[in-house]
Image (tube, rainbow, N blue to C red):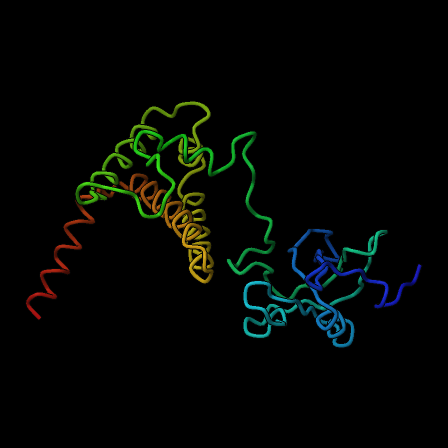
Length: 237
Protein backbone atom coordinates (compact mmCIF):
# COMPACT_ATOMS: atom_id res chain seq x y z
CA UNK A 1 0.00 0.00 0.00
CA UNK A 2 1.43 3.36 -0.99
CA UNK A 3 1.12 6.15 1.57
CA UNK A 4 1.75 9.89 1.47
CA UNK A 5 4.04 11.89 3.71
CA UNK A 6 0.94 13.53 5.17
CA UNK A 7 -0.15 10.14 6.55
CA UNK A 8 2.64 10.14 9.14
CA UNK A 9 1.39 10.76 12.69
CA UNK A 10 3.82 12.76 14.84
CA UNK A 11 3.81 12.91 18.62
CA UNK A 12 3.12 16.04 20.68
CA UNK A 13 6.68 17.22 19.99
CA UNK A 14 6.25 16.80 16.26
CA UNK A 15 8.50 13.73 16.15
CA UNK A 16 8.21 10.17 14.90
CA UNK A 17 10.62 7.30 15.78
CA UNK A 18 12.61 6.01 12.82
CA UNK A 19 14.24 2.56 12.89
CA UNK A 20 17.19 2.39 10.50
CA UNK A 21 17.85 -1.07 9.10
CA UNK A 22 20.54 -2.42 6.77
CA UNK A 23 18.68 -3.30 3.57
CA UNK A 24 21.12 -6.10 2.74
CA UNK A 25 21.49 -7.89 6.09
CA UNK A 26 18.36 -6.80 7.92
CA UNK A 27 20.47 -5.65 10.88
CA UNK A 28 18.97 -2.82 12.94
CA UNK A 29 21.52 -0.01 12.89
CA UNK A 30 19.97 2.69 15.04
CA UNK A 31 16.81 4.28 16.37
CA UNK A 32 16.50 8.00 15.77
CA UNK A 33 13.74 10.59 15.48
CA UNK A 34 12.40 12.57 12.55
CA UNK A 35 10.20 15.60 12.22
CA UNK A 36 8.34 16.60 9.05
CA UNK A 37 11.31 18.54 7.67
CA UNK A 38 13.89 15.80 8.23
CA UNK A 39 11.56 13.24 6.64
CA UNK A 40 11.02 15.53 3.67
CA UNK A 41 14.78 15.97 3.20
CA UNK A 42 15.37 12.23 3.57
CA UNK A 43 12.88 11.46 0.82
CA UNK A 44 14.12 14.28 -1.40
CA UNK A 45 17.87 13.67 -1.05
CA UNK A 46 17.94 9.89 -0.59
CA UNK A 47 20.08 10.04 2.56
CA UNK A 48 19.02 10.01 6.20
CA UNK A 49 18.21 13.25 8.00
CA UNK A 50 17.06 13.27 11.62
CA UNK A 51 16.03 15.61 14.40
CA UNK A 52 18.42 15.82 17.35
CA UNK A 53 16.40 15.99 20.55
CA UNK A 54 19.46 16.98 22.62
CA UNK A 55 20.67 19.76 20.29
CA UNK A 56 17.25 20.79 19.02
CA UNK A 57 18.29 20.83 15.36
CA UNK A 58 18.27 18.87 12.12
CA UNK A 59 21.28 16.69 11.39
CA UNK A 60 22.40 14.86 8.30
CA UNK A 61 23.85 11.45 9.14
CA UNK A 62 27.45 11.33 7.94
CA UNK A 63 27.74 15.03 7.18
CA UNK A 64 30.97 15.27 9.18
CA UNK A 65 32.03 11.60 9.52
CA UNK A 66 31.27 10.50 5.98
CA UNK A 67 29.25 7.57 7.35
CA UNK A 68 26.17 8.34 5.30
CA UNK A 69 23.15 6.10 4.80
CA UNK A 70 21.64 5.83 1.33
CA UNK A 71 17.90 5.32 1.66
CA UNK A 72 16.36 2.60 -0.48
CA UNK A 73 12.92 2.42 1.08
CA UNK A 74 10.83 4.09 3.78
CA UNK A 75 8.01 2.16 5.43
CA UNK A 76 5.27 3.37 7.79
CA UNK A 77 3.76 1.04 10.38
CA UNK A 78 0.05 0.15 10.54
CA UNK A 79 -0.70 2.87 13.11
CA UNK A 80 1.14 5.51 11.13
CA UNK A 81 3.35 6.55 14.08
CA UNK A 82 6.67 4.76 13.42
CA UNK A 83 9.00 4.49 10.44
CA UNK A 84 11.46 1.90 9.15
CA UNK A 85 14.21 3.06 6.80
CA UNK A 86 16.00 0.46 4.70
CA UNK A 87 19.44 1.82 3.89
CA UNK A 88 22.84 1.07 2.42
CA UNK A 89 25.30 2.29 5.09
CA UNK A 90 28.61 3.82 4.01
CA UNK A 91 30.16 3.22 7.42
CA UNK A 92 29.36 2.67 11.10
CA UNK A 93 26.00 3.85 12.35
CA UNK A 94 27.07 4.38 15.95
CA UNK A 95 29.07 7.36 17.24
CA UNK A 96 31.34 4.86 19.07
CA UNK A 97 32.49 3.42 15.75
CA UNK A 98 30.39 0.28 16.06
CA UNK A 99 28.45 -0.84 13.02
CA UNK A 100 25.15 -0.79 14.95
CA UNK A 101 24.09 1.24 17.98
CA UNK A 102 22.63 -1.97 19.39
CA UNK A 103 25.94 -3.61 20.32
CA UNK A 104 25.49 -3.87 24.09
CA UNK A 105 24.38 -7.34 25.13
CA UNK A 106 22.07 -7.66 28.13
CA UNK A 107 23.47 -10.36 30.41
CA UNK A 108 20.56 -12.41 31.70
CA UNK A 109 18.32 -10.92 34.38
CA UNK A 110 21.07 -8.63 35.70
CA UNK A 111 21.86 -5.49 33.77
CA UNK A 112 25.31 -3.97 33.68
CA UNK A 113 24.36 -1.30 36.17
CA UNK A 114 22.72 -3.80 38.53
CA UNK A 115 25.80 -5.99 38.36
CA UNK A 116 28.12 -3.11 39.14
CA UNK A 117 25.97 -1.93 42.04
CA UNK A 118 26.12 -5.42 43.52
CA UNK A 119 29.90 -5.47 43.09
CA UNK A 120 30.48 -2.15 44.83
CA UNK A 121 27.76 -2.34 47.48
CA UNK A 122 30.37 -2.43 50.23
CA UNK A 123 31.46 1.14 49.55
CA UNK A 124 28.56 2.61 47.57
CA UNK A 125 27.14 5.76 49.26
CA UNK A 126 23.60 5.29 50.53
CA UNK A 127 22.51 8.89 49.95
CA UNK A 128 21.40 9.77 46.43
CA UNK A 129 21.95 13.51 46.80
CA UNK A 130 24.67 15.12 44.71
CA UNK A 131 25.53 17.28 47.73
CA UNK A 132 25.99 14.80 50.60
CA UNK A 133 26.30 16.12 54.12
CA UNK A 134 29.76 15.18 55.37
CA UNK A 135 31.66 16.18 58.47
CA UNK A 136 35.11 15.90 56.93
CA UNK A 137 36.96 15.67 53.62
CA UNK A 138 35.83 13.02 51.13
CA UNK A 139 38.56 10.38 50.78
CA UNK A 140 38.14 9.30 47.16
CA UNK A 141 41.46 7.50 47.33
CA UNK A 142 40.23 5.14 50.03
CA UNK A 143 37.10 4.42 48.01
CA UNK A 144 39.19 3.60 44.95
CA UNK A 145 41.43 1.34 47.03
CA UNK A 146 38.41 -0.62 48.28
CA UNK A 147 37.10 -0.86 44.71
CA UNK A 148 40.49 -2.06 43.46
CA UNK A 149 40.72 -4.67 46.23
CA UNK A 150 37.21 -5.94 45.48
CA UNK A 151 37.85 -6.20 41.74
CA UNK A 152 41.18 -7.93 42.38
CA UNK A 153 39.36 -10.44 44.57
CA UNK A 154 36.80 -11.04 41.82
CA UNK A 155 39.61 -11.71 39.35
CA UNK A 156 41.16 -14.28 41.68
CA UNK A 157 37.99 -15.96 43.00
CA UNK A 158 35.74 -15.64 39.88
CA UNK A 159 32.42 -15.94 41.80
CA UNK A 160 29.55 -17.13 39.61
CA UNK A 161 27.02 -14.48 38.59
CA UNK A 162 29.44 -11.59 39.10
CA UNK A 163 29.56 -8.94 36.35
CA UNK A 164 33.26 -8.42 37.09
CA UNK A 165 33.85 -12.16 36.69
CA UNK A 166 32.12 -11.95 33.32
CA UNK A 167 34.49 -9.18 32.19
CA UNK A 168 37.59 -11.08 33.24
CA UNK A 169 36.31 -14.28 31.64
CA UNK A 170 35.76 -12.41 28.35
CA UNK A 171 39.29 -11.05 28.42
CA UNK A 172 41.20 -7.87 27.61
CA UNK A 173 39.45 -7.02 24.35
CA UNK A 174 36.04 -7.03 26.04
CA UNK A 175 37.32 -4.86 28.89
CA UNK A 176 38.87 -2.39 26.44
CA UNK A 177 35.61 -2.25 24.51
CA UNK A 178 33.66 -1.44 27.67
CA UNK A 179 36.13 1.29 28.65
CA UNK A 180 35.67 2.85 25.22
CA UNK A 181 31.89 2.64 25.42
CA UNK A 182 31.78 4.15 28.90
CA UNK A 183 34.11 6.97 27.86
CA UNK A 184 31.79 7.80 24.96
CA UNK A 185 28.72 7.67 27.22
CA UNK A 186 30.44 9.98 29.71
CA UNK A 187 31.08 12.49 26.93
CA UNK A 188 27.44 12.35 25.87
CA UNK A 189 26.25 12.79 29.46
CA UNK A 190 28.49 15.83 29.86
CA UNK A 191 26.66 17.51 26.99
CA UNK A 192 23.37 17.36 28.92
CA UNK A 193 22.18 19.43 31.86
CA UNK A 194 21.56 16.42 34.14
CA UNK A 195 24.48 16.32 36.59
CA UNK A 196 23.22 13.04 38.03
CA UNK A 197 23.55 11.38 34.63
CA UNK A 198 27.16 12.56 34.36
CA UNK A 199 27.90 11.22 37.85
CA UNK A 200 26.48 7.82 36.90
CA UNK A 201 28.40 7.59 33.64
CA UNK A 202 31.65 8.83 35.21
CA UNK A 203 31.27 6.18 37.92
CA UNK A 204 30.76 3.50 35.24
CA UNK A 205 33.90 4.71 33.47
CA UNK A 206 36.00 4.67 36.65
CA UNK A 207 34.78 1.17 37.53
CA UNK A 208 35.71 -0.23 34.10
CA UNK A 209 39.03 1.62 34.14
CA UNK A 210 39.92 -0.02 37.45
CA UNK A 211 38.96 -3.41 35.97
CA UNK A 212 41.41 -2.66 33.15
CA UNK A 213 44.17 -1.71 35.60
CA UNK A 214 43.69 -4.97 37.50
CA UNK A 215 43.67 -6.98 34.28
CA UNK A 216 46.96 -5.39 33.18
CA UNK A 217 48.60 -5.62 36.59
CA UNK A 218 48.79 -1.86 37.14
CA UNK A 219 48.24 -0.74 40.74
CA UNK A 220 46.73 2.45 42.09
CA UNK A 221 50.13 3.17 43.61
CA UNK A 222 51.60 3.15 40.09
CA UNK A 223 49.03 5.70 38.95
CA UNK A 224 49.50 7.83 42.06
CA UNK A 225 53.28 7.86 41.60
CA UNK A 226 52.88 9.07 38.01
CA UNK A 227 50.44 11.81 39.05
CA UNK A 228 52.79 12.93 41.82
CA UNK A 229 55.70 12.94 39.36
CA UNK A 230 53.72 15.19 37.04
CA UNK A 231 52.73 17.42 39.93
CA UNK A 232 56.37 17.75 40.90
CA UNK A 233 57.24 18.87 37.37
CA UNK A 234 54.54 21.53 37.46
CA UNK A 235 55.84 22.89 40.77
CA UNK A 236 59.36 23.18 39.36
CA UNK A 237 58.04 24.96 36.28
